Image (tube, rainbow over all chains, first blue to last red; front, side, top):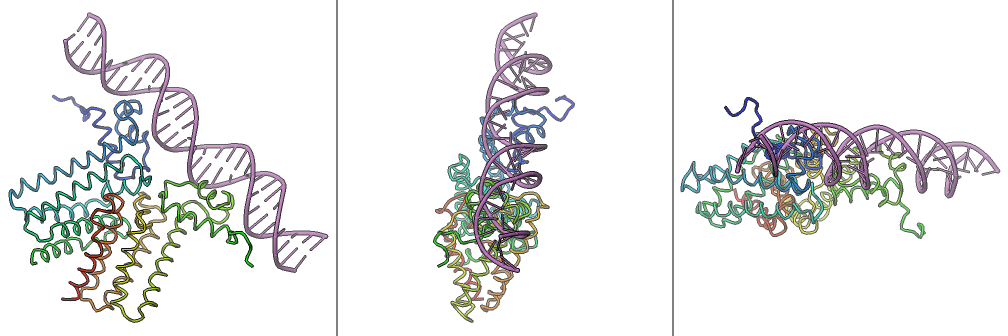
Length: 193
Length: 193
DNA sequence: TCATAACGTTACAGACCGGTAACACCCCAG
DNA sequence: CTGGGGTGTTACCGGTCTGTAACGTTATGA
């Protein structure tokens, strides 16, 4: 038996997962180290033995988020092997689900907004990871046989980013409610050219 | 003569303008009352005589921002009286200029992200003001003779919102660089239907 | 069994935060 | 001249923040 209690996970992983959840819900500046360690069922010293600083923890959380996102991309491939157009539609569906089930937006974008200092170490990481996401979407559009793949990918990116933000400022009844319609319309329109 | 020194403005207005600028640049949670009052050339007591709390100051700043935005809309009307389509193109140009000259995005959206507490008093105000902006854009699209005016307006809204946040996370070379092309393409496409 | 590394506990440092109290000042209206 | 409202100054409160020190406890694995 792997221990009766729920906790057979290493403190480091518990901290990382808890921090990710709390940063997402309350914002980076809105949650302190003490709150994280307490929620993770550990203490401050243990956290600082695994992470150099709060900034370091933030960066590791963002990397973990990017890792989850990569898992999504792999799921698209396994669920629609070789069918890039179906994968693109799956991307739209995934984005819509994300909008419906979670009203706190994209961790990377939120972090970029919250960490206003232009030389914050997390900024470099955010830019890298966001760029990687963009590249994947561009490749997907291209492989799906779309002319002007970059333009379509960038448009879809902005739409999703905007929908996530709009969801937080205007609410669910706002412009973000039409995301799927917009995205599907765009894909059809680009395919037709 | 209206006084030799630069400061013939009331402390309240100086505080409001300074706070607006600093909130915009460093984020709401990233700037304290002391920093604002010092930059405004006054002191904490004077601030608290004019504003109930920091939250109150935040709300007043957002209202001031909305007021500036309304001035923009009036400028569109005076510069292109009656020509709603020209005003719509002017909106796109204004948005693009905003993207080029300022990389810190929309104060309301940023505030909505930073103030993660769902019952924060500013949230109501943000929603109201954003809704008003949306209504104006929908009306403009409709009066410009576009079918599906709501859909176009919402799409343009999301594109701009997304471009503003993408500018902060991916940078100026990212998807936001194509904003004008996307927006103009959309308008043309909606007009053609 | 026993050394060693990981983990937990308590206490603390130093800084910053929002907000208030008490009091001195200055300038303009009456 | 006078009084009062708007303003500036200083000091302070209680709280929270990141990060560290010192020491005790537990688990692991050779």
